[in-house]
Length: 259
Ligand SMILES: [Zn+2]
Image (cartoon, rainbow, N blue to C red; front, top):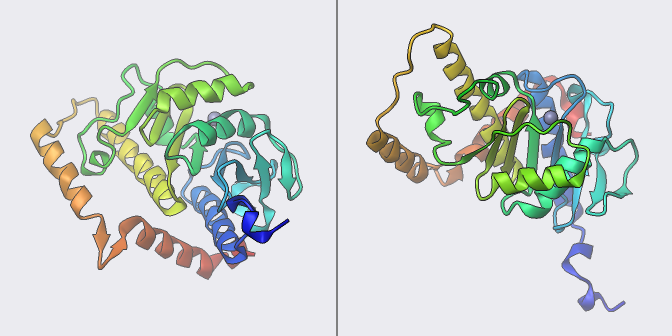
């Protein structure tokens, strides 16, 4: 085959893939460290660099605290394992594959049952209220799936979730957990982390039994604009700086994540 005719997907820059695997392993380790994981369940996946139709997935059975960069399998959009070894758990296919395929901003799909965001989704009104600064970053960017539909055991369920998610980056799966998408892992992990923090603040405030003091709409909009214009520091994206700091934490205490 003439090299010039190779589709983009056949160009495999090893260093880019290596970095992607290290970052995805870091996401698992950090989620475990921050109490965002549950047993050996849930999945964090990302499209393989250079591809639009295959994603990295950790073999089922590993605890997130032990996942390494070299562990990830590659799964294509037919659900077939095309690289690596290990079991593929059903909901990884039935939730993550359709969301990667259908959601426009879903190079990364992080699904967790993290405690405070999940607790929020158990309430009669599950909305993340604009009552704390950390919630404002999610203004108008959360879709709510109000119809719990049992375990995701068919592609149709993930397709339904992708449709509810629409153009937003976060899907609150009521009575279940959350799905956070992103164009890259630093962005997706930052969203996951701060969603849990904002939900934690709301749950704590509600636990007093006193009403929430909501931020007026005009101030919400003005602050959202401040977030937008202040998204970089010295030319670097805030999520990148955050993720690098978090990886240094892993480098000091559990450097095997990158192996
Ligand atoms: Zn789940």
